[in-house]
Length: 290
Figure (cartoon, rainbow, N blue to C red):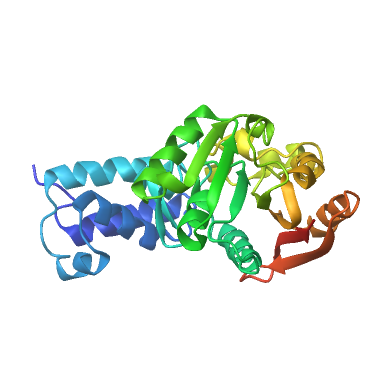
């Protein structure tokens, strides 16, 4: 019996139709990405070889990928990685998927630290997850990074990412709640920056998230409490003790949270508080100076 998805073009078209019927907006693009991964080729090669027969092993792999995506599993979890600041970052269901908007956090931090005349600025990265921010800071700004997370599984992935990106020597990962695992280290009052992309979704809003987020990404990395601001309060209260004079506190924030986060920071004694927008014009990062 001949396979209905005999050629690369036929398999691609059928998968794209299925994805579209399940509400996947970029169905053609995603089908192409999944098929490239299954075959091990570049996207332009799909079109050059669209009339060629798709090998059975590649078809089986592609079908499995497509079925996972039809269940709304994020593309990045299926592929196992995501690009962040030009770095290849491994992701698992124990880590949040790095977002392009989080690159703004890194950009703001690098610009802020450029004013310090240090060969290796000391940076604390809280809620590190996959380690993407910590690794970007180590690679792009030559920082010594102390990164923490409560998830042992996330930290395993973060350490692997640091090794894959040749940044292990610049980053130390600690398991624990925010600053707690750093107690006893000789960096209190000496950090040039405290960075965090903390959980900031309101608990009541968790069930309204897209299926890709709600069903697959770790809830502990998303839920910011009743008003979504729990972690901003806790981090801000502690951060001022860890920063050196003129050190920076830099947060990623959720949509519509800028004024509330600014108010929290102002009450703690920080100054020069500013809000930076992402490429979509959304207020995305808050930066303050000790």
